[in-house]
Image (tube, rainbow, N blue to C red; front, side, top):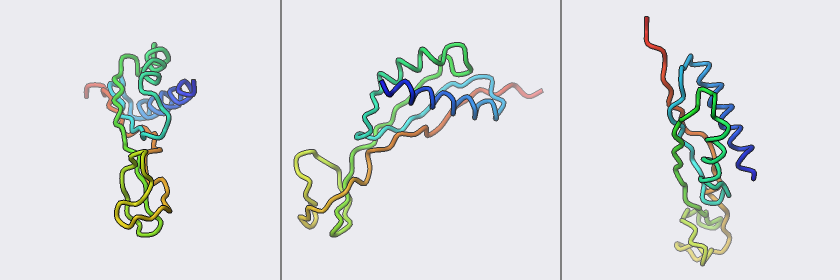
Length: 118
């Protein structure tokens, strides 16, 4: 259910930037979603289709780019992809690891149509 609030925020950001640019229409939004972020693409798309109706963003395409979960070894600083089976550093065998990526969720870009020059 938290996707509704997140989607409303994305729409507000997109509309604000589109209006500042003098856009006539928002055509595409690129979203970066970390594997650990708990964001469900289909839910965001569902809410988007509902709340964008009647705005500059109606009919805009949402593109989701997934970012893998990454860990960083606090002993040797090596970063590696989390495999959910072992949390040991593959370089030094250390067990002192921290999340280094995969929690992201942000709007990367907005594509818009601008009015024809006069």
